[in-house]
Length: 97
Image 1 (tube, rainbow, N blue to C red):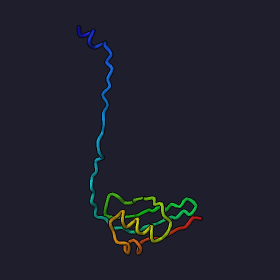
Image 2: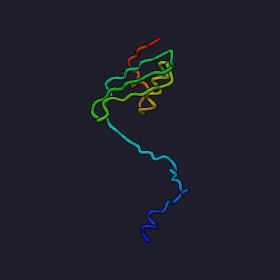
Image 3: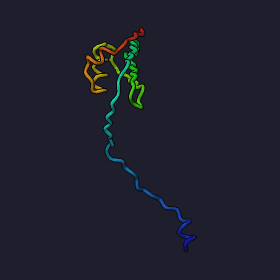
Image 4: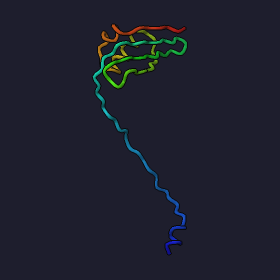
């Protein structure tokens, strides 16, 4: 009997569905020591590298679809929940044509 039950093939139509996205809020205390932004005018994308101390996250990298200085600083400030003036004081730009 067990031979017969175990050797049978079963067609399953049950599908797994994942509903919603799970989010985790993370708060870190870190000190940003430098922000480097490389602006690529041909692709209209800015790549930003942020170096920090006092946290396991010593370097963070972002890509933003903007190339204006003010827009880049605003995007970084929003991403890190910081004031734009803090970003402005730390950022260095490199422009690629």
